[in-house]
Image (cartoon, rainbow, N blue to C red; front, side, top):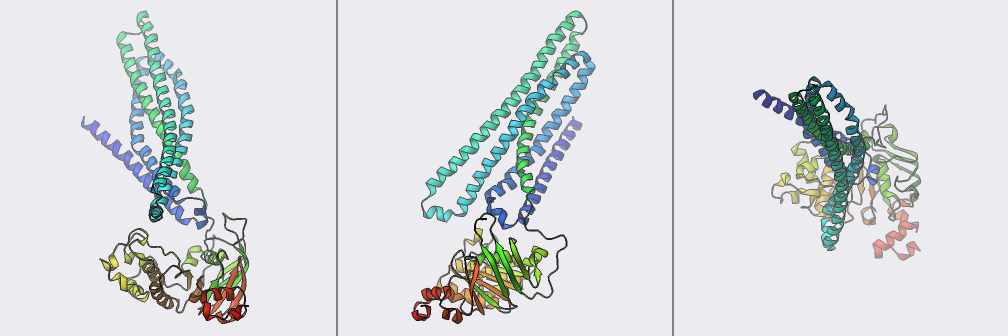
Length: 519
């Protein structure tokens, strides 16, 4: 009894450990693979879908590899042991059992394929549910402000019901699989009883031998039925595996070359676009940039202005090498981006976006994201330089205060100042400011402008802005329209040219610019 208990413990622990280990390794591999994908990948892959594959699909594999495998192992050993005893008891009847094996395998193959197909469809529907949850909860303020709760509840219910209906179809096929296997297996026991009974009457087999044979046959039949249930689980796991392998098979479109060219040291921050043409992967019918050329010198403050859709933010996307241009070349410090390691390129660039990204972590952890090895003193200094200390000191735990998901506990201006502190701490040669003050009130904008002045000092800076007040002091302003450069110069020069910039300036500055200047 002690040996049996020890063997059971060892079997259950070992197989369950393997399931957990495999699941953890797969999650790490899938997450690491997702981090390597370019932003273009996520134009078509929904975040909720990726999360579902990373969590639900791997959890399914964990169950199958763990508990289901343990269950299958135990029943397989029972089946093999009983088969040996069947052969010893009556080779003739055992041969009849072997002849019936194809009848048992046939429904396993037939319904197994159906279960696998429906399992894949079921996991897809579960992913739809996960994606809807992710979207609705992340935008809960918009949902509630528009009184959209009932409609979202209805739409979510529809997706849940679709997942349920697909799961019911899968369950039905799996139930048929198990029922048919059990019917055939125990039907074979009935045939054995009938033939064995004739052998007993003819004196070729004793009643005791027949009873023993039937007992072993029932063990085999029960084990086969149990294994068929596990096969149903394996088909579900096969559907989940397909989804995971499909994800892992997706190659990143932006990768480091086999022998990347090193960027020169120390960083200079010189940027150059040479006749660049680019289409977004999901919008191949319209060029975001066409024959675009731009040169930015070391330490220069250059502003990109123009109407929405002119291609300003696309310049940033390409410089960060989130995408590669369709034609032309982009260089950083004289090295073409395609020939350099993307990670090395991005380590020379700091981005302050319009919507600052704040993680569900403390103030210190969010700022230190720019340079993980930074000391506490350096983090505090960056916050002071970004004019963030003023509100951080009022937080319950100061630098250790938890900011909530996406920084929900902070105002827009406070989030932006933390984003600037992160960029200051990173201390990169090139700074990208993408509409950094567009959605701030006057007081917050004042703080942010002061922080930006500190941040831009000594760095090559590219600024995207619709509000011309934030760019008129730039060393040079480049006016863009429909993916092309249409004018360049200082604020005063562009106003005198009476072009697009002058019209935009007249609209924004009103009385500051004479109407005659733009006529």
